Image (cartoon, each protein chain N blue to C red):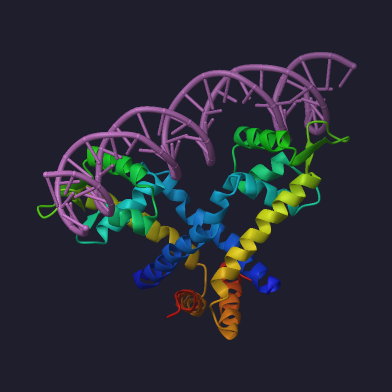
Length: 142
Length: 142
DNA sequence: TGATAATAGTTGACAAAAGCAACTATTTAT
DNA sequence: ATAAATAGTTGCTTTTGTCAACTATTATCA
C-alpha cells in the first residue's frame, strides 16, 4: 500500500479545501447561500434542466433541493415549467431577474479568482492551469 | 482581464469540489460527523492544542466548538487539561480510545483515496502528485 | 495596588443547512 | 387493470452555525 502517495494527496486535499473555502467566502456575504448559487449556476449553464438532473449533478437530497428551488421560485429567480410530455417533470430556467442576479454573483466570483492570480507571474498562472487540466485528465481517465 | 484563465480555474474548482465531496462521503456513514472528525484530526496532529487555536485553524465559532468538544469529551474521545500557567486555557488531547477511533477513520480515508488511485497507472499517479505539489507551490508563492 | 480591560471558554436561545422517510401525482410495465 | 417506478413535495429530525450574555482568569496601567 502506497501510504506516502496517499498522504501527499490528502495533504493537497486539505490545502485545496482551504483555497476553495477562501474563494467561496465572499458568497457568504452575498444575499444568497452557496447552495443557491450552485443551483443557479447549473440552471444558468443549461438550456433546460429538471430537479432530478440537479440532484445527480449536485448530489443534493431531493427533498432539500425541492425546498431550495421553492425559495428561489418565491424570490422570482427561477421559473418552473411542467413538461407536457411527462407532468412529473418540471423544467427549470432562470428568470430575467435570476439571470441578472446570477451574473452579478458570477462576476464577483471571477474577481475573487482574479485577486489570487493577479499576484502571480503570467507564466506561473499558465503552469497552474496546465497542472489543473492534467489533474482532471488523470482523475477522469481521459 | 483574463476571463479565459479564470474560467479554466473555476472549472477545475468545480471538478475538485466534487472529488473532495466523494472522498468525504464515507465519513458521513461513520458514527461521527465531519466536524468531529476534522477536530479530531487537528488534535491528533498536534502535541497539545487549545480550543482557541482550533477556532482559528478551523474557523469555527467558539461557542459551537465548545459544544462539539464537550460532546467528544462526553464520548471519552478527548481529554481536557487545564493549563497551570493560565487557567483560562485547556490543552486538548485525544484519549486512548480517541486515538484508536481516529486511526480507524483515518485509515478509512486512506482507503478511500487508494480506491481512486489504484485504478491509475503508477507513472500517472506520480504525475498527479507532482501536479498537486506544483499547484500548492504556485499558490503559496513558494 | 486596585480598577479596568482583555481573553478563554461555557451556556442559552435561535436559525439555517441538510438529510431521511412517508407521501402525492403521474407514467411505465406486466 | 393493477402493480411498480419515477419526479417532486412535505413533515420531521439532526447537524451546523451564529450571536450574545456570562464566568473565570490574567494582563494592563493609572
